[in-house]
Amino acid sequence: MDPQLIIEKYQNAIIQIATATGTGTGFYVKEYDLIVTNDHVVADNAEVTIAGKTFEKALSRVWYTDRKHDLAFLEAPKNIELPEVRLGSYESLKDGDTVVAIGHPFGLNYTATQGVISKVDRIREGLKFIQIDAAINPGNSGGPLVNLNGEVIGVNSFIIRGGDNLGFALPVLYLREALQLYQPNRGQASTRCFSCGYLVTSNNIDSGKYCPSCGTEVSLPEVPEKEAEPVGAAKTIEDILRELGKDVRLAREGINTWSVREGSARIKITYNAENFFIAGDAYLCQMPADPANIKPLYQYLLQENYRTRGLVLSCAKQNIVLSRIIYDLDMNKENGAAAFRDLFREADHYDDYLKKEFGCTERLEEA
Image 1 (tube, rainbow, N blue to C red):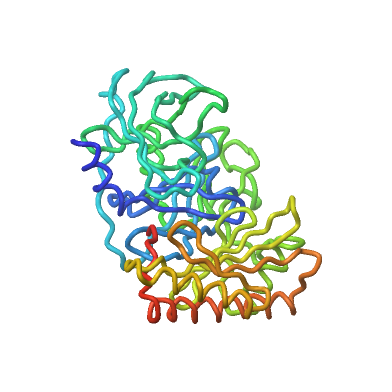
Image 2 (cartoon, rainbow, N blue to C red; image 1 turned 135 degrees about the vertical axis):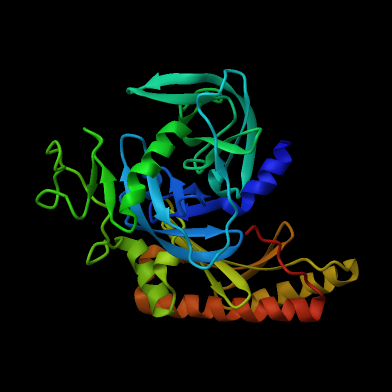
């Protein structure tokens, strides 16, 4: 199968995953109606944020974790038709086979890289891994490694930092085994004991924290009664978002990064802890298609920057952006809520106005 056809086939099955501490990739396995990813992507969270090309951001329950094999299974979104992707055969793989790795490295959605299998059975910590030279990077974790038949043959898991395209994927044989192990226990919080391999569930866990088979201390992906909250400026930002009616769990996009929608505008909020400032960037529409409208648009933007207080309109490549910067020591919940409420309101206003008055075009956005 042509790599382009593989990418087209997989795009709707690839899932973006975000927590308060990072981002990663997952993929939907229709046979088991589960999203597969790495355990280190979910990072001890019992709920994560997921998004795909055919559905908006949503919360997803983590049902299964496996520290030894670095696997996690998530609940699939309801009432959404996702494509079927087949699991391949590890035994048929050979060194030199062409493979495609698909994921979201560095937040670049639906990136695919092609390479070959350098070694089918590289042994690390007692497990076989598929060593590949296809470039995988932070954000690729949990994505599928696919052969030219369009079958999943591994789960992209880690790289050796400083190496030249030294990537490793967990073979599909381990994934298939884990899926079959969990299947009879669907809907139960489960973890596979990293010591003996026993499936520990909420029904058989010993004293709430021990494997009933070998006594190793384990942790189930249970939703806590009270969610752990961030501290400092990050906590203030989340308090502000709640004040403005936003769901902070859906807004989180990694460490000190949040993204929300207000009308037709998307607002990205980041906290730069090194330089002590919070930036709110509202991505509006794009430059007008008619060149005759560009000069009047520039004049309008400059005039508005004299009028607005604390808000700045700018052009970033083809995008028109409305921004506000606040130093963390100057911001509290009250004045921060007022500042961001103003940003949200004006972003929605400017997005509609610029399209109507200057023929600005809808912003191209990756799903």
